[in-house]
Image 1 (tube, rainbow, N blue to C red):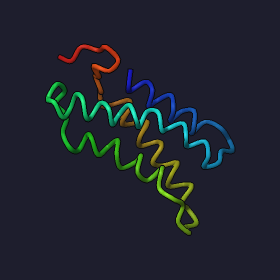
Image 2 (tube, helix red, strand yellow):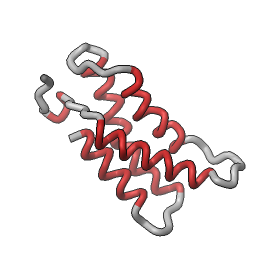
Image 3 (cartoon, helix red, strand yellow):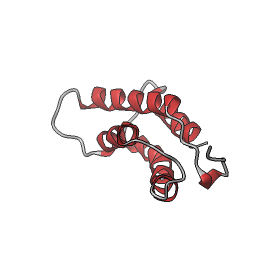
Length: 104
């Protein structure tokens, strides 16, 4: 379920032809669920997850939510970070007890 929330938020942000930075507020809900997932499942050992997989979610989120520097291509980099986040949400499973999913 957490993967689907991330993927839905990323697709909602990537598909419009014109989008401003205020639309990035849509990512706050999946990011909050991800932090709860890290605190409840990963930290307590219910779901094994490597640091590389965690950083595949945290680094794009940090870049997307960072304030905009005076770079010409900053919007392109944010779009690239959104696509990386979408790829991570498709390829890395996040079974969360928050949504009642069984952790194998």
